Image (cartoon, rainbow, N blue to C red; front, top):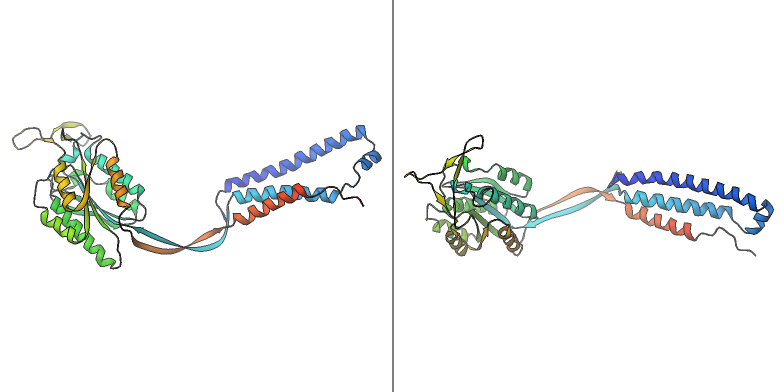
Length: 340
């Protein structure tokens, strides 16, 4: 036997206290009666009193209270087998790790804000398979599609711009990697009819415009491509920090001029339009990711996992029922016999 909330069992200590208080009260009452009534007179005044009925009432009242307290603790006895099904969509998140994602026009930075919003998205998912791609000029499948959201968060937390060999941005690399991941998922589950979604998160600065072929390949695989822009149109410089976190300066181009990076929404809008998805933006709030999550709920769900597991069976209903029955008996059971 195990308990759902064993702390309620401490309330059982109230029952002996109530019994002791009742005994003391009846004793004091008997002492006062002796001062006003003789034994014979008192017996005549309470003619028909039934001591056994009083004891039955007392036992039922205290027994009912005890059973209700035990029921509140949630006893679980025996086991029951339950079937759990996980349904959702196949979602790949492609996160831009180019140097421009370190810009701080969205606090604390574009990358940190994007990671925070992805974490919020993961928290609100229920049954969807999710994977993570990180990309710059190259792309890597940081986490294959999984139902283990805790593992996915670990991969997300370690995603940093300095882990990539290139600091530029190439959307085609992310799309090609996504295409391979979706194709691998199809080979593993031929019967899965879930919608396939690619969410591209970036500031929109694309240093290689040749993503049309990769995007066409995704649409042929029935993958819907959504984009999430992060940054501001006014832009910001790209800070450079040393290992201790101190600001060393700002990123410069080959001519020595400080680079200003801006959100380029048109590129992301074009990708979403050609990919059959929608374009959203993240700035100071989280409306973009919330809108995307609402759209995700409308897509076709597939079954990813169905498993059975044994669990202890909750038996509080019986105890609560008998407890209420005993309380009812304790309240209505007679203490006096009907006279003939």
